[in-house]
Image (cartoon, rainbow, N blue to C red):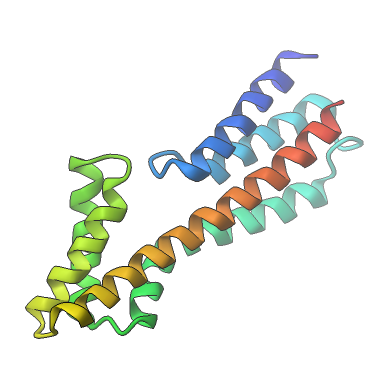
Length: 158
C-alpha cells in the first residue's frame, strides 16, 4: 500500500470521528481521504463521477450543518430573539466549552433569547430543544455519510 493510500485511510477514519465530534470537520476529512485514494489509485479505481457525487453531498452537509440548528429552533416556534440567542450561544459555547459547548451554548442561548423576547420558560425550552434536535440530526447525517464514504474507500482500497 502506498503512502497516499495510508494517509487517505487516516483521513477517512478521522472523517468518521469528526462526524461525531463537533470541532472536527468530519465530512471534509473523509472526502480528502477519497481524493487521496483517487490520486493514488487512479480513475479506474475511484471514478470522477464518484468524487463529484460525494463532493456534492459533502457540500450539502456543510450547508445543513449551519442551517439545521436554526431550522430546528424555527420549527419548534423560536422567534427572532431565540434564533439570535442560539447563534450567540453557539459561538460563545464553542470558545469556552469545546467541543460540546456549541450545543449547550445554542440550547441555553435559544432559551435566554426567547425569555428575553417575552416567552415563558416552557415556550423557551421548546425552542431550545429544537436547536438540539437540529444539531443531532446533522450529526446523524454526517455520520451516515462518513460511514458510507469509508465503506466505499476501503472497498476500493483492497
